[in-house]
Length: 159
Image 1 (tube, rainbow, N blue to C red):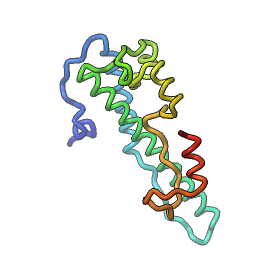
Image 2: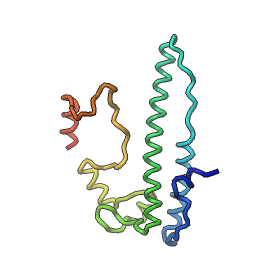
Image 3: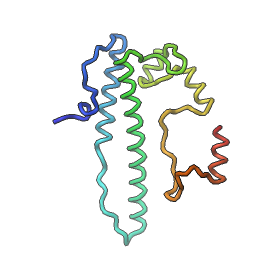
Image 4: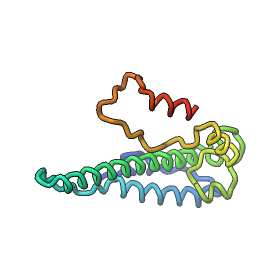
């Protein structure tokens, strides 16, 4: 039976530089933890429509589960990308400046793409995080790009 790692193609044998072997091991362990969390889905019992409070609590719990799943998947993407960077030989190099990423930063955040200086520049420009929580939008909001006054204000403030 194939594992998730087999399906994702992350079990290939790659020559890992000795200087990144500890980071590679940590990232692989994190990948395993995230895959396990991602594959475990909470059981959702049927909602009793006669009890509105219980139904609301159940819906709230389902929404939180979806947000948690989205964050887990985003984290998994970052970890898998870092593993690929080690395998390709580009790990430890800032994707913005091309300079080496500080060792202390890699120890703290082994999946980081940017040096501390580059990360600060990105955050100052309003581009601090590559993967963020999805926007909480109403079901009736169109995908046509039309924005209301509140969204336009938020977009101007972000710019």
